[in-house]
Length: 385
Image (tube, helix red, strand yellow):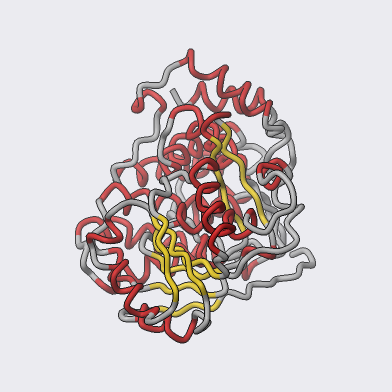
């Protein structure tokens, strides 16, 4: 395992009823802007519970943040923050709302064109407004990390950014807030967390047995509880496990000191930007074909993944690796998340525009070896038809 610095300042308040802790987590004199997505936050009572917990603080609401948060919408929130002297942000929702809040936190105090934050991947962020989150959808891990992804609709560009300045100060994780989620969002959350782990684990052996076993345990937990989360939506234990696994999948710990991939995510972003697919849907399409395409480069870890995660021990190592990839595809399908471009009415004629967009965004040397070129991505997409 390589040398590393691990830093994560986010405080977690976990469990039923923890929204009440907002009264002590948010400064008493804060001027708060609550950011949320659709009306489900209000309809389910979560928004009202949050407002009640904030008591007499000055509070404004900003709704309408999309499932893939758009630069255009978020800049409307930035205008409100700057106009009204907001000094604290609170995200109430899933990863998209939290991602969007991270951008608003940075853009509201940014000197210059806020689009440059995304063009430079957040390296030019020097400060941000403080913020916290109330998580309602376990999936992205944004509640405990420093990363976000924002889409600029007018340019059909979906770009990530990272900064030490956009860690949430705290995140409230109440598993009961996920009980009313539609099955599609629950399934997407399982897939999203699963692929987050895979991107940090399924690379090449790096003498990191602690990180490997941690990642494998998280993957096995998702395999066990994923179907249960769909079949028994108000099972507190299952939803609590799912929420915690999704957080641990991308809070930086399992990726500390080990090589990471992320090629599947970068190609997936282009599918979302150009065709509006859910983020997890794109991951389920790309990952199996990406693993098959790069089977030789990932041989050692693929065999380990087959044996330890899927308990595949029969056949040659090559056969075990192939079986593990098929098990992965079957797992996604069992959750109702389709794994072929054709399942979303996408065909061969859609591939070249995706490759062109990938090149325009500088995504030409991806993966743990920087060898995932546009040609490799083209083959992956053809294999995903």
